[in-house]
Length: 411
Image (cartoon, rainbow, N blue to C red; front, side, top):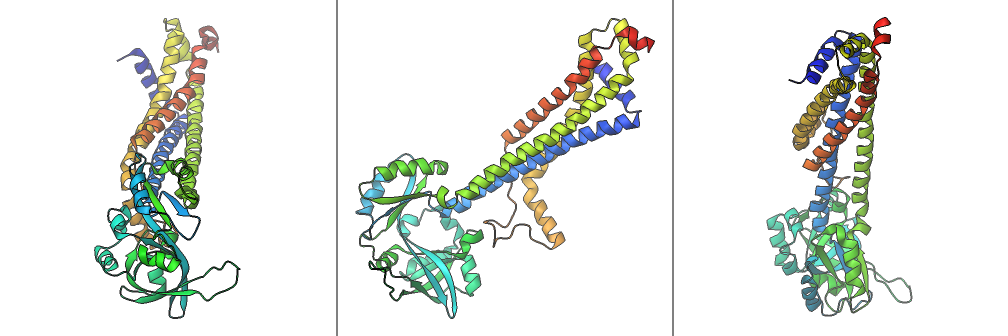
């Protein structure tokens, strides 16, 4: 066992007899541990929200869209889709036609955005995981069926097999008003995404949607699923600018990008705030060591007269501060690593105990608190906390090394 460790341990035991210094020392250890714990847990929550955004919202929403400027639709969309699927950046391409209107059930009206899809192109789509198999079979069985968001079904009290009417506005070149077109559809089942999307989302057959929308080619546009959803903006512009006919370009960052931006903003704010919390806790280490140096001036002087070097004294007090810091880092990190993977279950238990719901599925796109622990977050948290602890020990250790034996013993 090194002399530095023995001296640091001895000074630390002597320090614990002074209750005031001991309290400040404990508060520094507690603050560092709490900061590491909360930082790991909150970063895991941000990772969980990002994962759910990718797996839920982006599983239903196309990563990118190209849709025709004219009512003719995409010319020869079958061959165009086949050509784009050969692009290494593209995972899948499917045709679609959108209809926006008012869903009518009795005297109730609900705005709805119906997307016409081709069942053959959609059979491998990830969003099918959000649809019950029997609902999908009913949808495939007839052309006049529709899948509606769970929120629409609940608000209009609809069940599979019910018939609904969709009022679709009719546009004219001279801007005159015309009676809306009436479409009769049979509810096949529900599609559940979560949040506000469940209140206006619907799926119908491509052929029926194109017929009612007056799309001559059979598809208004193409929906793209990319291998890297976060490259959607650049990829869709690259594809759109080279498209042989006039089309509008869109990607998920324009419609739902605010969710991802909010997650990234909260991640940065959380990291800054909790790093400052750890830094404030490290100031307590400075205070503890400064008081310890003043209290041990005579002991330091005696050590120097016995041949102790400035380097030994400096390392001793740095080691003393590191013991406090490392204790907090290890305990806080361990608790964070244990809590983060089980956070959803913990929050669920709290909700049951309090009889309330923290995340409502009617407002947010999920109704639980997601969490995904990542090793890099743990490593970065430990490294940052360790650096702050080391920096906090430099000044007191340097002050201890400058203690002059003669003046300390005479005082």
